[in-house]
Length: 148
Image (cartoon, rainbow, N blue to C red; front, side, top):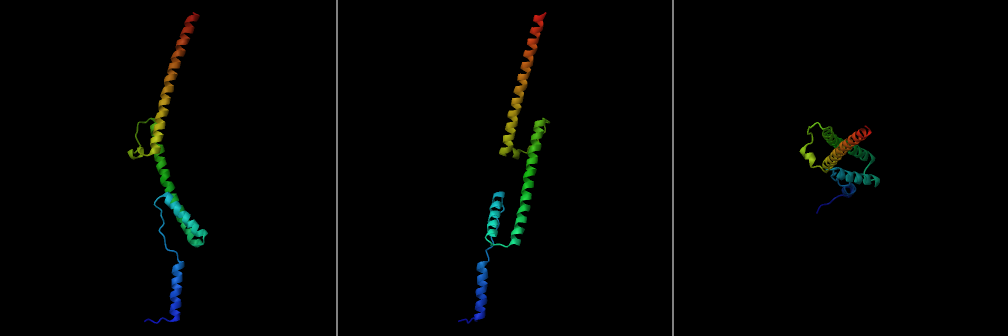
């Protein structure tokens, strides 16, 4: 049988109280934007419920803003590549800048499909214009021949 003094018992109980009040450290889910947004929402709820202090909350928000800047830069770079590829196609230089992996992207595929439709409409309009010009020339020649 072990005899523990009242002071030691009080210290042990205080340690137990601290451990109960200390929230367990949870791992932040930052694997993608949606998961990071969920973690940020949880952090905001903890701060609102006074479960974390102001300094920690401020530091975490700073970390999230840096993560967001990186994610934004990554998406802007991808968009710039797509725009450049489409500009090359539109200008008709004949260069192929589109990475084959980009063709599997539904947005790139949709843009290229719209571009092809636009090109088709353009060629149809040019054809109609040529036909109209030919008809106009024919009418002018008939009118000019009738006046003589």
